[in-house]
Length: 291
Image: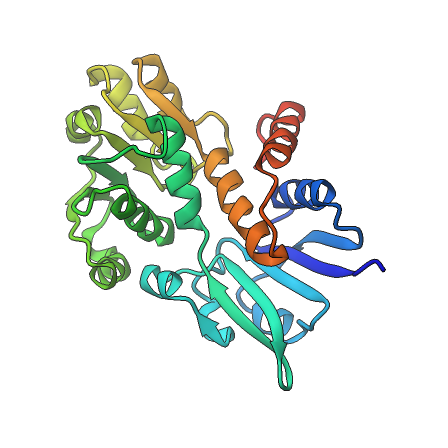
């Protein structure tokens, strides 16, 4: 008997998302006939209505910007990590006595950890000195990921200290103690070059001044750069880092690994990493700027 289940990625805009490619590849590899994964463009204003329509035909949702915080009050339960980070990127749909129960969780942290491990050389890798660029929801997930890798006091460089309130609250909930500084592109170069890990969570092109400063003034980097942006791909910062001899992990690696964990949670089966990775590489080969 074929079981029909639905899942989707919600966000705005979302038509360009590679999540359907990754999840569809997983469903094929797992032999899950009747499973369908789509992209649904959803604004913050439209989100409550979409959530109300969920029933047991749904396995779950992937949630991307700008909905990772807006979804929190709309679910029945929030798992501890997602609550600490203050961002939900995955909603699981389960049975309840009357209808469904919705559980919010966060697989971005898992995706960040696994992507950084790729660049650092394996599962035993530890981080002592890290720099985070940006102060939004992904920065909070990055603090959690760095904590798992051993770094609980990274430097966080932001354009405005007055906009770090949410990040500081998340850090306090997680028990990490970042050092917050105003991002000045030229001044940041030395800190970036000496770090074991640099994670840029800034939007597309927002880190370009840092890239230009690094290309002009930067010594050879000693660590790994993960730029979570993958549209455009490669970013200016990634290009400058690689040109100086540093190791770069593309943002698509985080996307892959967070989707791997989503598949496990939604299907209850180990995700087929190799099949999902192959589908991702094929999609990027067809459209290198895809995201």
